[in-house]
Image 1 (cartoon, rainbow, N blue to C red):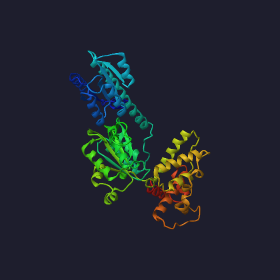
Image 2: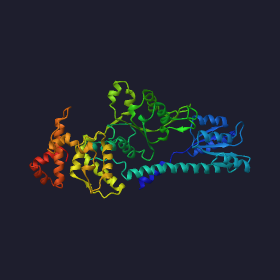
Image 3: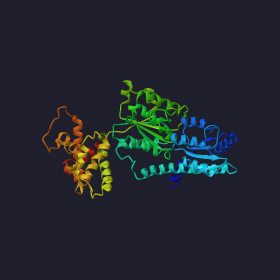
Image 4: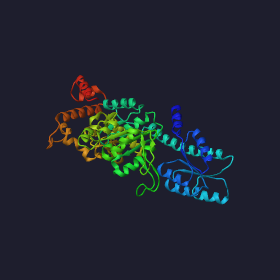
Length: 474
């Protein structure tokens, strides 16, 4: 509990950026000194025109502006800011208070209206602290949502096979570091779960974990998503928008399907990784970003680099620590564990009195190749729970591709149907190994887990049974 409280406190530590707009130099200097002492980043400009240029190139959390200034007024600036940066808190000051002026300011969208005088600094301090508190609570709420996901197990990686235990150990080792990580593996293996586990076990756990699928955006949209943009920088850019690098500042940015990124975007990403700065589209200003990058791909980078589709220098920047997530068919001993995990989740959510999975069904699940990996197994179990009317998941609720798989593969060796030899041939050793595992698993299920009885059912010695069980990790 103490750790959680400390992390929550840390989540709201970053101070808002402030833009001060006032033609009185003494006021600007006073407010700059005041808020810099409190840890804010402060920019001061003498009028609305200069402020507009700042807003076109930077993003501010709070804007403090005088109403009466040479040229355009503070109300004019307010209208511009609400259009280009609607997420900014806008505070108007005046030395000549009147009811009409106050009403006009608030009607134009001002969040606060204060009178210049002896208490000006105190009023502004109070307003800025209230805004800071509001932003802090938003960040803390985000942290609590992430912590809830972690504590309720939604982000847990399920597995007890040697390959998965090695990944768990690696996660614990690399998580506290700041090094970039490249997660590889087929689609559906759980690469994002690995990235989340690294983040949740890192010193950045209280900061944002933001994800983007690089293959889901065309080049121009991907650039604006990552780096942000300023109003008017392209058609449809109606306001300033913060990019994901800035949104993930202090935390982790998970870039999925990085292998689908265009060469042009690869150059821009390489520059960000090298310099630690981003420039929103249409801006002349750069800002520092502190973000840990975890990238993922289902592609073979050696082939992509050799064929000129991925930059070798970027690859080495991203793959400081490589982690490969095995396909589900490469860790079949985890299938029963995963199947029961998904059964329990969907049984509860659908409120169905299903108590388990029949041995025959489990044999089918273990024999199938799972081209869609863990994601396909999850979808299969969801469907099975939805369709099952009995107390156990039966073969009849499995998709045909899974229920009939053993008939044309290793299941044919079990004598249930006449053997069908596929046109393309078979991997003999793999088929035999799968059949061995099926028999061992089925015998154990039939024997209620009693190994001596399972050996009797298989008509082999207990010593032989132990040999085969060790060979297949049972």
